[in-house]
Length: 331
Image 1 (tube, rainbow, N blue to C red):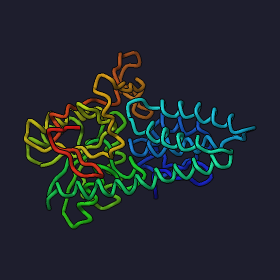
Image 2: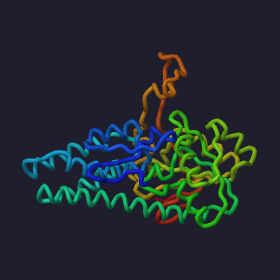
Image 3: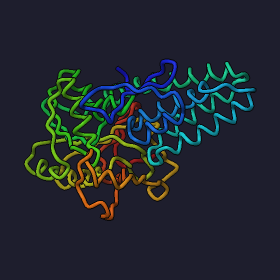
Image 4: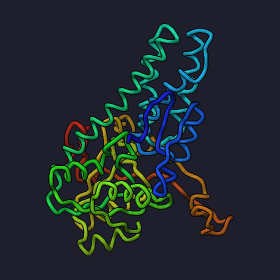
């Protein structure tokens, strides 16, 4: 099953319900889709690209229009709201902008609807294809019996299908290589424990769950020999990814372990550097509560960034659908 798809409206796997149950939700309006994006029912840079693309198509179908001009104004308005739903990951706006640009070429309401949906479907199909190529390219970096540490979730659930960093693992396993994985829990929302472990166990790939704070001891004991993570935005001087990635990269460098980043070229935003990117800060409740269980005083001060920045000096290689990039990164 794909993470996100179109069937009269936008359907997606509600990732907030995993691993307890696999449940589909229907988004019949752009507001419902934005809500799903903000509460992380759908997340992961490539999946958000598809969500942005389908969101523009959804705007074209969610109501009737008196004329083409009214429709185009409406699409532009909804596209702005979609693109701003999560500010750090660049892929969301890439998907939105691509479908909006195509749709605005239409000359009738029906033509715009047809163009928007067709282009959104192309975005989704292309994501699956490029993830397979990322997997094939990255599998060259993995040897039989490698043990890979990964952070957050970069598999099917973070994409339309297959995955980026986990796609590399899947491709290597598909080639017959025996690969084991250590998955960090990825606090505070536990995408590693809830999603990565769920995916890998479903695929019968050997996975061991660790706390984020166990990364150092795992590397010091020689329990892993490679690290592969994804990316939410790659700029000229580094990589934005889930909070905690920077710590993993520093620890890997200290222990002489290769630190690889797997991401599609649409994640590259090379007109920007670290200082140009807003890091999303999420709600204080994510740290104070775990479900209904209170973990901290309600009035404690909280700093809860969703992402951090890893300089390119710590990145051993970047795996893309077009090949593997090595230092020095002359973008």
